[in-house]
Image 1: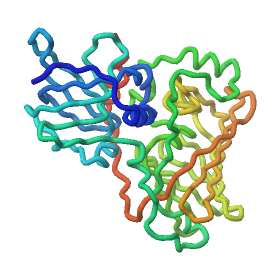
Image 2: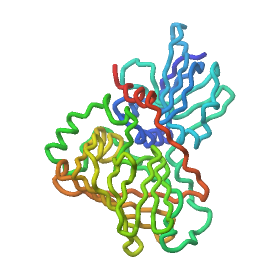
Image 3: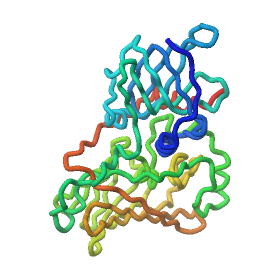
Amino acid sequence: MKRLLISVFSASLFGFVITSAQAHHSFAVHFDPTGLASVQGTVADIRIRSPHSFLELDVQGEDGALQRWEVETHSIPLLKRVNIDQDTFEIGQTLTVSGMPSRVPDRPLIFGLVFETDDGMVYQWAPDTLVPEGGLAADVSATGLERFEGVWGYEADPNPHINAESPYPLTQAGLDARAAFNPLDTPAMRCIPPNLPSILYVPYLYGIEVDDGEVRLHHEYYGIVRPVPLDGETVVAESTGQFGEIMGRVEGDTIVVESRGFPDLEAGMASDFDPNGVGADVPSSAQKEFTERYSLSDDGQTLVVEYTIVDPVYLTESYTGSTQWSRLAEGTPIEPFECDAETAAQSTSQGAG
């Protein structure tokens, strides 16, 4: 067992660390993306879970005494893409973990992004894990709505979303809600998934299927599936109803999806990790309406999702934004995502002193 090493990494590593931070609820509250660190110790516990995973390391300090360090890291799907699962590391194994330290001074906690075993194996997650260079190996031959079918990876914004003003035109109620946000008591810690448009900003896969007059939108994050009828009918997006009533239509080469009938939601307008929340959740009311417009680039390799959100309780006027996705290789699997309540709560509580 070796001692704790604090260091500043290379610019390239720093860049991927910043981008990967976006995927995590209350991330900026708990970890410092500017103070990168490395810790080496013996693995004492391993829990590969979703939405976050945890390891524990016994680390020898300057005085020779052992200290138990906690390592928080990504979910099962994201770790699986860099070949990490429950059996990758072993209890008693020497492991070096690099990442971001806790914002709480001297707390033995790090968010792990790079893992190196004592035999030289390195496991590292970066945003381009979801967007392989070149997209599909062959041109898209499908026509019509079938061109939308496939698995897509979000092109993450390289800029961190950390404690800034929301771009939303917020009412006083919206401003008050952001001011009252408590990062230690959020829907995320209760395994309540983010809503629209937040689920359009997570670095997880997005599957689209077209079948018999219906489009199925499958978000890997939390396993959210939204069936969209294109015949003018309206359906409830999920049994819980938290994604409202949904209907769709085709306008030329664009799929238009309209949702309304949402319940009041604590983070229905924005989650703290996305570019509309930038550090704080924004609630939504039962008056929320959400419209998505799906279009493709000429070569079919890029999916553009433009959205408009209306909620007179929290917005002074409608707001329009967009996200962009890259088509992934045919056969790319969408991994199961089952939120573990214990680790979700543990992740949120990390900001406590």
